[in-house]
Image (cartoon, rainbow, N blue to C red):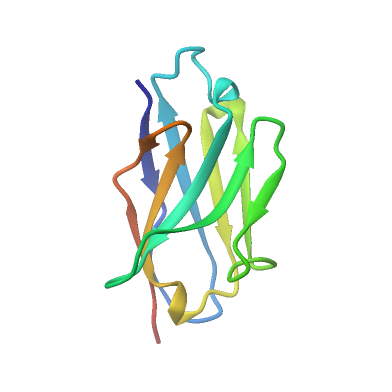
Amino acid sequence: QVQLLESGGGLVQPGESLRLSCAASGAASGSIFGIDIMGWYRQAPGKQRELIALISKSSSTNYADSVKGRFTISRDNAKNTVYLQMNSLKPEDTAVYYCHASPHYWGQGTQVTVSS
């Protein structure tokens, strides 16, 4: 049973940056190194949850078009942590951001609000 705990959300102005962290525990191998895919999703009010970034065990990455070039996902297997660096934030990035670990583990979410 994998537990995921997100942190790093908050209120920022347009154009600013935030870094989200997702700390994992409980993996069978004792490390997120054994988890095939980890990712970040977000859900804005009234909208469906959407995938924004994935990172594989080999650290290959994929991004939604809406965040490509602005967001960077990374993983530190030694710290059992996945990060999402978010730059040039826009009001439309406002959402609850969720960490996911394959096959079906979710964090509780962290709120990101981008507003002037």
